[in-house]
Image (cartoon, rainbow, N blue to C red; front, top):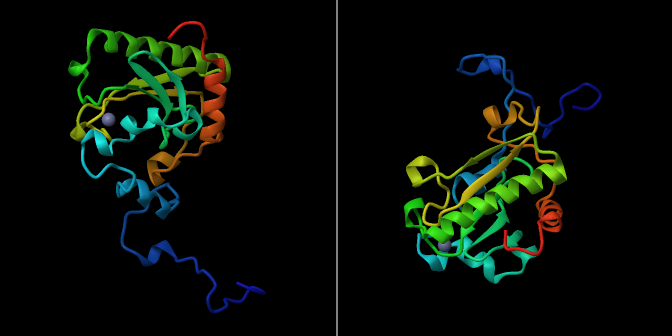
Length: 193
Ligand SMILES: [Zn+2]
């Protein structure tokens, strides 16, 4: 639109009234770039350990793999596809799918690292709440079902808006590399937790 006149090639806003559908109170924000995630381009071709990003991560540098902390049997890394700022994953090093597959030592450390991740997130970013959990199996929503991972999602009052509901999008104020650095720096030293 130039000088108030439509110009060939200019993007045109379409009147929603011209299309079928049920009008509601929401605006739609279209995010085609999300197809990379939704179509699963980042997911391993199969569920073997050789294709698994959680198996590959520990062989890389902390910065490259976004690793916050390396424990004895489990490690903590930033989720590449975060639901919220500071979204961490706690994974066993072993390529196991199910919570019942963990050894006692792994299960204990998974819990300890989860608790430490919460403490560090509270101390460094004032998280007011958390969503914790594991999706067991693809039907339950696990993105990489073959390798167990515990989500640690910090929450703040007002951190959610209409975007996730209408556009499957998240507004994320902190870059992943910065979040990794913030959390790794504050992670308690001197023990393996
Ligand atoms: Zn794996």
